[in-house]
Image 1 (cartoon, helix red, strand yellow):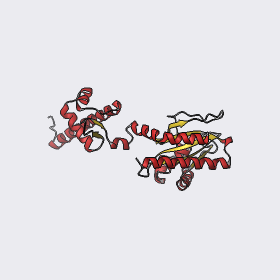
Image 2 (image 1 turned 45 degrees about the vertical axis):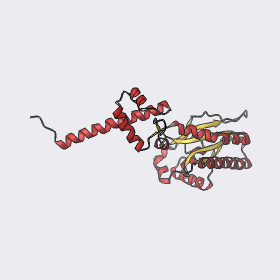
Image 3 (image 1 turned 135 degrees about the vertical axis):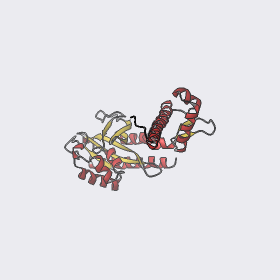
Image 4 (image 1 turned 90 degrees about the vertical axis):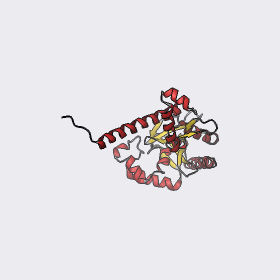
Length: 268
């Protein structure tokens, strides 16, 4: 005898199917707007995704209410909302950040004569989003887009300083996740947290041959209007060009520049 599913089970299965389908459609619309990098009309969205206008309108209404999508009042077209920027779904945020930092980093580069970097936190590490390479014969060379472990880089330590100690322990909950790159690399979570606590006080971080032998780096935080660390900038130089006096000068320069960039962001 065939079992007849209960009404509650039937409703539950139906609801789950509806939720998954709706989510899929919402994600398709978000992905489309991200890929197009411009505002779209309902007609365009329907044509590109092969969806009915009524369906697209209902999904867009929800996305607008949740601020993942916003509608231009004049054109009635739809573009990415503030929530997508906040959770990093849109590369526009990064492009904006690079553009905001560029003039300040160029001045820093001209003053220090060393390699200047900007990085963001990504996948429990750092990714360089901007780089001006020194013209000196002996220089530090790494391309923008390169990723490094966060715990042994000056920019990484800066970004980690805005995490709680508990979060840091979660990120590096296994000591073996702290790979030893040089003799100076920190490989203990407890030692890393002690280092980060110093960074929180000084607002400056140093990588003294911790990531690469022969490389000295000093970094500072870039803060938005909410006081959140959205990036870190640094100066990298060959260790043999860095004296005690030079290290103080580089720290002062990077800290001053970070402050100016942060102030410019808070005014926007």
